[in-house]
Image 1 (cartoon, rainbow, N blue to C red):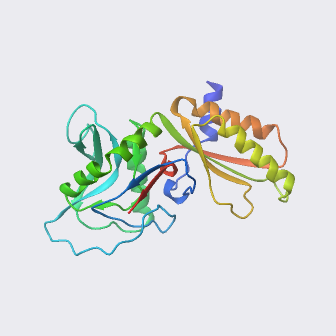
Image 2: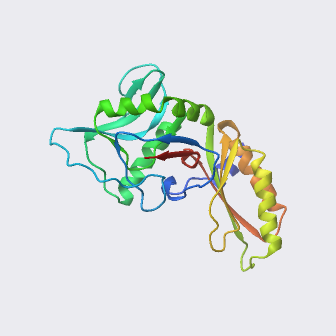
Image 3: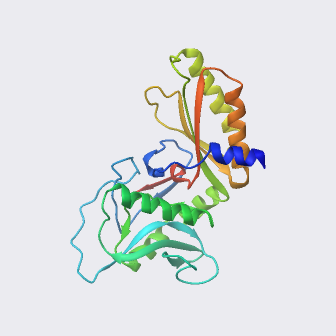
Length: 256
């Protein structure tokens, strides 16, 4: 119980959108979008490029896209949910019906998207969608599920039963970046990689020795955090920040 409390306190989620820290590695599922209005989040590269959109008809219905999961019991909305489930075979798109238009690019909208995705991913494994994807009607949404069925099926199998954890390392206090600290950060990354199904290093930033996402079993994320704490405690000169668990945004690449 003490370890669990320690880990939860150490790894509490920040009040920021997960899409703000994109990965650029190859250990991810690839899904191509068709029939959707796609928008790139100005806070991070989601892999989607802005597309010119036709003016919607007043009565035209759109489906704002949160992700894809496996079908489960019941139809339509789940109990207590404001999310519609549109099925194709054993997959279901998680969407919110509304006017066919792209949402505003502001922090409130992005964080609302994140909260919904985080709520969904805590109930079951999903392939999470980046912010700002809207399908033009049910037919386009079902066509996407049909066209990308194999990629989505493989993506769900890859992510099944896993969270994303993020680790950032910086020099401690006034410690300057040195080759020794850089080598130490690489060694710690390698050790943590052994405890994860997959890992993606982020682009190097000023004064950051390490930034990476790790795909960790849901039942083992506390042990992962404790392992990271133990590795850091055994070394001097490094300060670590561990956040999560997150929806596995960085292990999915959706492209137009």
